[in-house]
Length: 422
Image 1 (cartoon, one colour):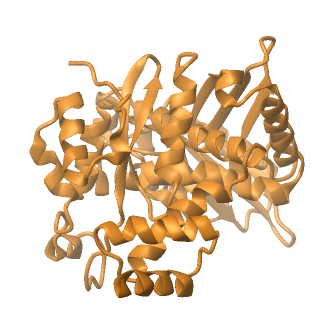
Image 2 (cartoon, one colour):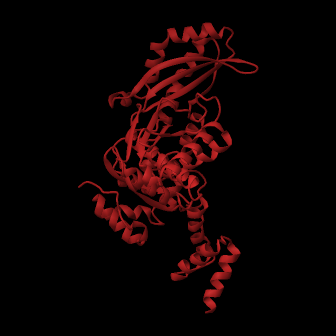
Image 3 (cartoon, one colour):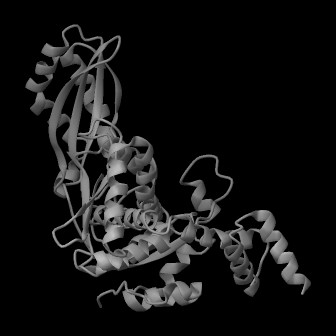
């Protein structure tokens, strides 16, 4: 059964009704949601994941709807504490559906490890000596993970750079490895450790750092969407969206917030699926310093010949489906099941589409009514809950805060007290 992500009225349902709707549309076993209950990750299980465990911390997991990616409807799990993120992604995906949704592509799942060699007296000659021993070093690295080659991955190349630091010149070798459906950190780090001694001997120096780079610029995912002008709000909004993008492309101060909006979507799906949010974020922000030579927008917004917006995004996307929390965390396994992805490459493309959707929603809001209108309405609900509102009190407190535009804890307390007096 093909999944439909167009779940009309989904946000108005209760939690259990939403679960039933996802099960109905996806054909998943209803028991998959048990992993998303508050006790889905036991303290004992957490104790085996990291050190010095004293408990677990819950993060809300929502389902973004309306996504069509490469012609397939997909329901997207997002783990985030920030109001408006899931709703904004869903709304942008609804707009993108008008002209076919998101189209994605990616490179192969290629990661790199660096071996830094110090105290080399002839670094340029050393670089050539290491390259002359390329086949030997690749074979030594490949021997550390023969299973990787059996599934179509493995060591692809060895490159060598000369890095000039203020006081030293370093020889830095890169192992280039196809890690298949893994994030790949463990695999490439093990390889770097194994070859470092021999590589340093050939270079005539001493190996210091032997670790992957999170600048995963050989592992890129891309997403594109054409956004109907009228669905966005008309030609004036289209023009202002382009203005907003161009400022982010030119000004690092704007770009930082622009890219944070992208990462609202990206990190929420990365976290939900048990992947490494910090690795993805580091790679994305390093990628933002590209040809422009300064920190700039990761995405682009252009007006096409028909007056529509074409939004595009390219990101390093080091995520996996095997190893780490993707296998040990029950909620991560459930989240991956909801997406129905079958490869790390497909997951990376989906995450990039969600990041682009989040960006579309934010830029459209900024170019139109402003970001605060929708964001603060959702914040009002958090305030109502924070002061102890229950049941229908929540909606009543929220309505007053929105009417008064008074999004403060003290005012929420006062409104709740007034309601309970009558």
